[in-house]
Amino acid sequence: MNLVISAKQIMIVWSRKKYFEDVCYEWLKQKENQIKQSSYYNYRFIVERYLISYFGNKNIRKLHDFNNFVDELSTYLAPKTIRDVFSVLKMILTYYEETYNKKLKYKRTVLPKIEKKEIEIFTSKEREKIENYCIEQNTLKTLGILICLNTGMRLGELCALRWENIDLTEKCFYIKETVQRVYKGKKEKSEVVIGLPKTKCSIRSIPINSKLYNILKPLSKKYKKDAFFLTGTTKCIEPRSYQDFFQKLLVKIKVKKRNFHALRHTMASNCIEVGMDIKTLSKILGHANVQITMNTYVHSSKKQMKKFLEKL
Image (cartoon, rainbow, N blue to C red; front, top):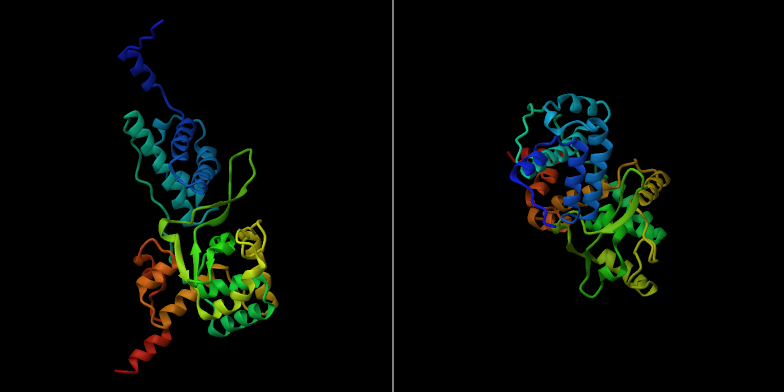
């Protein structure tokens, strides 16, 4: 039996109202095989935690003013997170317009501005104190901190680092993976996922300096190639747990508590101070472009300003 569908019937199907929630899941299904697993789960978290919980089963064509939504988010979310949420919302609305050939009319939405914060770095005395303690303890976990201070490796990248990614012949670290905890859905718990790094530029090699080489060389024979560096086993440590370890270490050696990312900022700032060019630093850090490196790290300190003014 042949099934013949007329153009009129097609128009009726396409003209039916579409619920916002249905469009969200259609969009997620399309995205699932196009993006990294961690990115997909991040989008899904935003959709279920913020978008569907607010807009629910409303007709997508009747959504036109999102300022109230932004106002509500502003009561408990940071400006950067609000912009991330709205970015996902815009992608879903664009998907609907392109897929169903329908133009949505919505008012201009005012998003909160992101205030640029000063990066946190450890002072030279604090850095020296951290390095001395890590070398003295000589455990895999403390040496991981030493690695970050000398390479600018991200927390997730360090947690994913295996001994097979440490080439002591070529004296290079090869960054190929990252570890992160992702939300999997309403009824599922979050889970630790090992996947590709943040961007294509994040897949890179970082030279091993003499300080690290002399410490790592005698250790390398003790562990299997597929073992994770921080644990020495085939089971990785998740970033949140290692962050906790780092915070406790700072308390123990009486150094002001800062986020783990301060190690990366400290390394980058030190590189600028010793005269490393921006392009080289950008490659080491795995930034998507040189502009990111410049905007983050190229600034004049009071010490530098005084130095130059004295020459007048």
